[in-house]
Length: 256
Image (cartoon, rainbow, N blue to C red; front, side):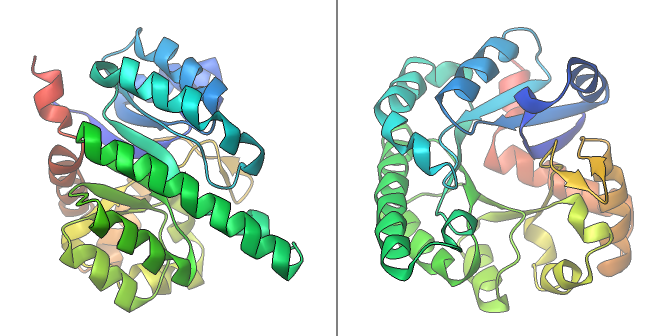
């Protein structure tokens, strides 16, 4: 039986103890941040069937954009070892304190990098694990449409209702992080997510209320979402699991 899937976790950043605990009880989709983390995830993947991985460059890591050729080569070389490309997307938080002109320049660089990854996803027919914030998400959606990306996950997404609908209408998915347990602003955004496209994630080891994020927090997320969407936690888990089969094709991969 397939374990509950964590759709987005920086697995290589967990402690060894956290990693062992996670894989004992859950199935984890690990996402990369840069070239080094890509290499670390590839090594960790060799030791567990409960870990699947996505390779990419985190859009907020501006100093690593130059590594695209090396990361792209890893993706091509290890296509049979990965289930997607990520974490990729568009920069936002790293640009907030920049002067206006510099912010525009770096966003353009981020958009170029994003398109390079999306073009690669199209060529290799791989899904994408995305970091998108605010109205800039419309530009990401335009790029996904231009390259006919059929499978995409918008992780910890808290955009407008119009954006939520646009994502859902394309058959893409949105994962909800443990931040939903206590953050009322995030709860208000999550209420706009069509229930059918919900997925669960930890985004570990990102901290929540001072606690390091780990996959087991998804159980509390499912409870919270159940109360928000007037259903049971198990209903939420079932939706997330079914979406994982469409998005990552994990069940098919692990039945071989």
